[in-house]
Structure formats: structure tokens, C-alpha cells
Length: 265
Image 1 (cartoon, rainbow, N blue to C red):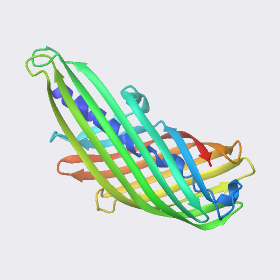
Image 2 (image 1 turned 180 degrees about the vertical axis):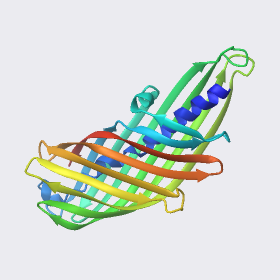
Image 3 (image 1 turned 60 degrees about the horizontal axis):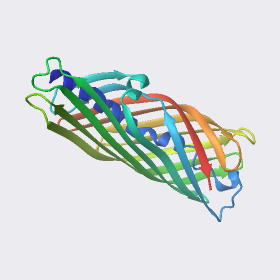
Image 4 (image 1 turned 90 degrees about the horizontal axis):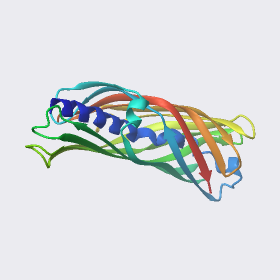
């Protein structure tokens, strides 16, 4: 069981680490409507699926076990990937914008026990969900770019389940979960370099002791517009969060390159 405990701690951390990836592409979303061929009187909508190759570093604790130091590369994380869905959606009208970030992720691992007496093998399954909702206002907006102020909240939810199969303790399972909401504020912006290329980025800070003690999120990237309706963004993103409650500890930093597609309607 000691091996299983450390295994699920590693996979739990990996699962929670990928919760936050959604906003990485969102920095490109609030480009002013006049920049993409629409008037300020129209609503515009954006959908941005993305991929974030992030590693994870920090301290975690669950199930009342001692705190564990984690240093997992993206290669370590992807080995345990089962299924996931990640996308950003935005609605914009003139200087005002609303956007939602969604991430669902399931990770899993299975390991035979050394002797196979108490159990033949141990399954660890992680289910994670993150939803971010925020509103933005462009304090600066022209044909060269935009600068937005944003405010909103981020919901985190993760559940870890350990199942014993076969042996004396077969068909038994135990689970632990945590759900919290962090308020956040920040800025995001875009600078058009020419008709095709642009720079985009954002910075956010949140938590403020409401749930997490501190949460921060920064991203910078370069985009290429194939048309007014579609572009791609490549860049780098780093995020940190420090959450502790009732024996659950999640104090980590995750960072890595990002790649996404941005569809405008």
C-alpha cells in the first residue's frame, strides 16, 4: 500500500496540474472586433481548442499522508493520459467581453502489487475539471491592438480513486476529492505586428486567501492569422497555485509551451 499511496500521489498531482491550461490561448481571444473585420455593433464569438505541454513542480498532500515533493515532466504526465477535452469560448461586443475556459481530464495508472496477497494489482484514477469565467473591458483599443482589464473566478475540482483488485482486499476502493473557487483579476492584450503576425499575452493573479492563498498565471505568444476567421498561436505559459485545506495540499508551479487554434465567427 505504501507503493500505491506514492503512485496515486504522483498521478493526483499530474491530474490537478493540467486543470489550469485553458487560459493559455484565451489571451488571443479578446482582439477588438474591428481588428478582424467586424463592427463594434456586432457580437463576435471565438472558439479556441489548444494543447499545453506542461511539466509540474511542487508539493502535494492527500489522504492524510505526508506531503510529497513532485517533479514531473510532460513526458511523465502524458504516459497516464486517458481522455481530455480543453477549449476556450468567448463572446465580444465592442470593448466588452465574456469568456469561459473549460478543461476535463482523466488520468489512470495500474500497478501489480509485489506479492499479490492483499491485492493482485492497484488502479489509480484521477478525474479533474476546471472552469474559468471572466469579464473583460478594453481600456485601449485600435487597429494596432488592444489592452484589456479582466476579473472573474476559476473553479477547480479533482477526485482521486484507488481500487484494489483481487487478493484478500479485492474489490475495495477509497477516494479523496477537493473543490474550490479562486477569484482572479488581471490584464491581457494583443499587438498586431503586421497583417499576418501578432503578439499576445496576459497576466493574472488571484486566490487572495478566499480559497487558494495565491494563484498567478502568465502567458506570452506569437500568432499567425491565416484569415479573419482563423489563426494559430504558439507560446509559453507558467502558472502557480498554493491551496491548502483540511489536509489537502496543492502548492505547485506548472509551465511549458502551448499551441492552439483560434476560430472566430
